[in-house]
Length: 130
Image 1 (tube, rainbow, N blue to C red):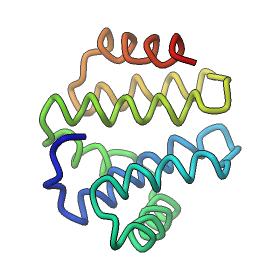
Image 2 (cartoon, rainbow, N blue to C red):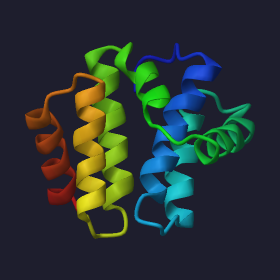
Image 3 (tube, rainbow, N blue to C red):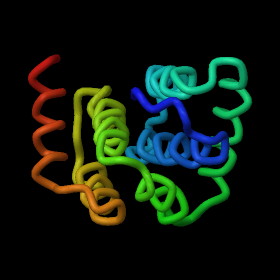
């Protein structure tokens, strides 16, 4: 992402959503954790480990994605696009995509007012680049 102005609480919320996406298939892998940590480091390298732990804790104690998506909804379309791309990369990282994962992305896109068509194009770009 080009915009490095995320506040720490926003970064935690967005990262918690990434953790949620990684866990939705009940197979939370080290590769997914590393992808999330790389995302965090692109914004805040000095506190990345603390932010990651807070994001995991927030996700564990939450039963709704709405608190995470409210933060994303306020972002620019460019940032939303980058977040959607990161979500798809995490979901596709294990080379499978189940109905729960696809449904999660449709719900997220609806909640942050992101076009399904654009989300689908991002997904195809990622699949085709593998």
